[in-house]
Image (cartoon, rainbow, N blue to C red; front, top):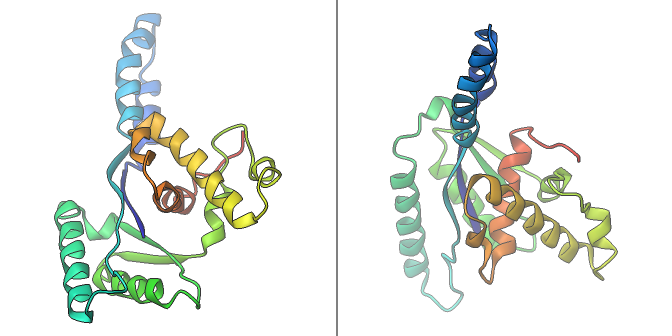
Length: 195
């Protein structure tokens, strides 16, 4: 399961607008650049991005439960400074045949019930186009649309992480799960756009 915890400052636009409204001379424009760059660079912060396997099929149910509890406690530590009033938790809906993932989805929804929890469809993340290569371009290269969607998410997440994180985070075996989690957050912030 891919997990991404992303800080997003939704006041960035008003901060930049406020700076721009104070411009009266060319020197004001020059001095404003550092402030604008600081605002933009701090709009997003990737606090956590990883693949988590909390339920090995061979483990005893009590071991699975302990693994999940340990994982959720680690998320609590990462999110301890988050204000529940302005924190969203995005969970990807897990399809019926994948009962193990559905159970974990429900545990996560329960664990974060004090936050604004949204369960969203798996296909939604592919609405984002952060590069010049579209989902349709990628689908032409692969035999299944599932593989193409995963590659599309990885491509877009790597581009995002070049700007606001560390793209090497996706240099792992299960990068597609991590990319899915990252892209679900972005699309649910209504930040999707096409180039």
